[in-house]
Length: 94
Image (tube, rainbow, N blue to C red; front, top):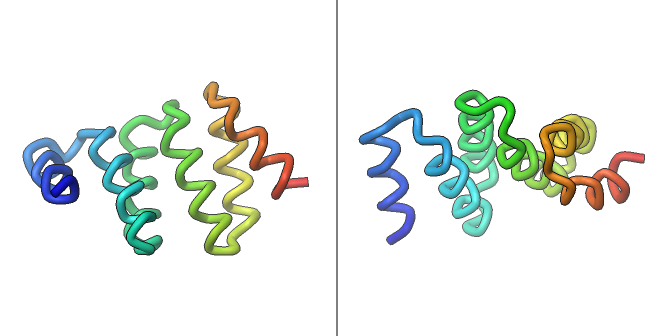
């Protein structure tokens, strides 16, 4: 049901950052990481200084074994104020 709501929200407002971010999280839970990555990238495009897109993108890229790209995004998440990224940076980026 939530997926339908996010799809409608994006159709109504294609610049709705939170809808892309939350739909991406749902895609991750469904193991649809390619779709999640696209939504997180779109969220970053819409709000490039919001750490949420970077944190979520970095997290899913770790799962996809794309560590270098993941670390770049996690570092941006930290730069823009999300200190949760530090744990992942410490674990995967050193």
